[in-house]
Every structure is written in C-alpha cells, then in structure tokens.
Length: 412
Ligand code: SF4
Ligand code: SF4
Image 1 (cartoon, rainbow, N blue to C red):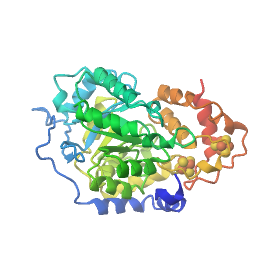
Image 2 (image 1 turned 135 degrees about the vertical axis):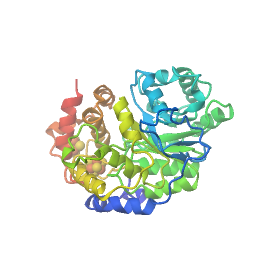
Image 3 (image 1 turned 180 degrees about the vertical axis):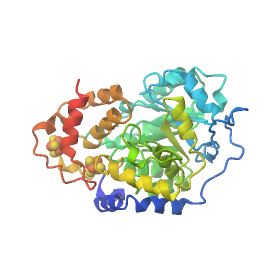
C-alpha cells in the first residue's frame, strides 16, 4: 500500500507502535456508548436451562443485512465435528464464518442443515485464486453453486472474495475491478442464491482494496484482519458503517493462542478475553470472528461478550502483552517494507503463514500456502541476501531472520 493513499503511513505506524499502551485507552473512550443492544435478533439464543454456562450477551446489527448477530462469532478452518458449532449456538452464537479453502468445513457446517439453517448467518469465501482480471461471471456463479451444495443449503447469507489486498506482486490488484465480479454476485442475489457479498483481507493492500470496493460497488460486507495491535483502520471502518457495509473482524487474537503471556495473566480472566473485550469496545465493527476449536475456547470467548469496558488491570495486561508481541508481529494492512526487497518476496504473506504455523496450530495450512508461492518468490531468497529490507519495519521486526526461520519451518 502506498503511504499516500493508505492512511497507514510509516510515520503513523511508528506513532502507533510507540502508543501501543496509551492507544488502548483512546479506542475505548472513543467508542463508549456505541454498542447496539439485542432486540428482535433472529438469534439462536442460549438454550433453556443453560444459564450456568457463559452466554452471548449482545447482538449487533450486521450492516444493512437486517440481521443482528452475536458480538462474538464462530470460525474454525478445518472443523471436523459439527457438534462444536452446535455447542456454540447453544451459547447464543448465530454467526458462522467458513471458506471453500478451509478443507471440508463447509461440508461439516452443512451437516446441521436444514434443521438449523434459519438459526445461523453463514458467510463463506470463494477460493482466492478464482479471482483474476479475466475471471468470467459464469466461473464465479459455478463456485457459488459449489458452495451451496457443500453447505447443504439453498441460500448463503454472504459470500466473500477471499483475500483481497494481497501484495500486488503476488496477485493482480486489478482483479477486484473485473466487472464480472459485481455482475455475478448481483445476479446470484437476484436469484436468491446469496443475500449479500463482500471481501476479506489481511494483506498489505487491505485498506486500498476495501476503500475501492466500498466506493465503486454495492458490497455488503468487509472482513478485515484487525486487533489491538493494528490501529489506524478507523477511517475505513467509519466509511463502511456510514454506507451500511457490515464489518466482521478477524485475526483479532493475533498471536494470542500459543504465546506465553503468563507474565500478564489475570486472576479474573484471560488475556485473550481482554483482547476480545478491547475489540468489542470498538464502535465500528459488528462482530468479532474467532477460531474456536474446543468447548473450553467457546466458553472462554463467549464469556467476553457484552462486556467491553476494560478494567485498568486489563489495560495494563494488554499493554504488556502488546510489548511482548511488538517486535514479532507483522501487522495486517502494513506494506512499509515491501518496496525494499529487490526480489519481490511477499514478506507480509510469509510472516502471516509463519503466524499460522506458530500460533494458530495450522501447520498444514501454513505449509500448503507457502508451497503455492510463485517460483523464485519464497524466502529461500533470504538465506544468502544482505537484507536491504531490515530496518524498514517501523515496528522493528528483524525481517530477514524471521523469513529465514519461516522458510526452514514451512519447507517440507
Ligand atoms: S532478506 Fe533479502 S530477499 Fe529476503 S525479503 Fe529481505 S530483501 Fe528480500
Ligand atoms: S514486517 Fe513490518 S514493515 Fe513489513 S509488512 Fe510486516 S509490520 Fe509492516
């Protein structure tokens, strides 16, 4: 992303980094009072007699979709057992996120239909490589039909273009301007196959691509990678809100899964809950989509619903945790270092695969994504490079050494 257009300039990133603790308070103050309370939501709702378990406390309008969805929502790439989703629904979750790329997750979600179809808002994503500057409307229609079959349903609430905003040297930035994209999605809406469409992104051109889609298409939803480490998205989110475009946050726990944050653990909750609460206090997002792989994780995350006020202790814990991550975490939407690499290595993408490998427990997916990089663009380049990229990260990431480590781990 260019410094001129992104609003996430090198200077602003440096400022954000230095303000990593103070900024926690700023975001909360600005968003106080903006929460929508549940009223008439087409929600599953906690099952009778389930009061002893944590339950969703808040439902928020999902853009202009007409739905109110649980403020905490369900994701799980690679899910094998639909009972996990059913348990989440018993806790009050009524939004599930999946993707054609998530192995058989669409099929597994479809196992609870048609019985529970009207209890869930489903978003799926078509394969990223489907979208090029020359993809035909028929190809997109066929992909939608395939997901309808896999999900065992006759309509999908929202279908996303998976991963816009990638490194422009990795995929054609003009692909979202292909008029066949709008034509195919709008035709599917008129046919009742889908009720809305949008795009997801955690790439370096995230802001530019979302801005373009909001300005030039009737897009219904954006799904940005964002968390308490990635401030600076506020103008984009406010524009989406103004236009009735739903905002579903992802990558919100960043590396908060396997990293040792015990120095910042609290007696009355987890650091992950504090991270979720920070997200929920953000006024311009509708739901936070979190990967939930166990009953315990569902209970832990659902317990953070509807309680966005962080205590001073939680803010302190988040600040300390942020400092722990600061020099290791490659921020979604940042491209500050990309121009420094003479070999066009997609630095941000590879560091995201590294995150999947290390923190998400998604080793298989990380290796598979890394293997798909074009020849000559992997981090093998970095092994014998004198690293002109180093020193270009406003957050102080040692780019070369992290890429070399990623290459070693992701190469099988
Ligand atoms: S170490 Fe060299 S090849 Fe690797 S990203 Fe940096 S500049 Fe590019
Ligand atoms: S390594 Fe640093 S500069 Fe490069 S994309 Fe990631 S956060 Fe931005």
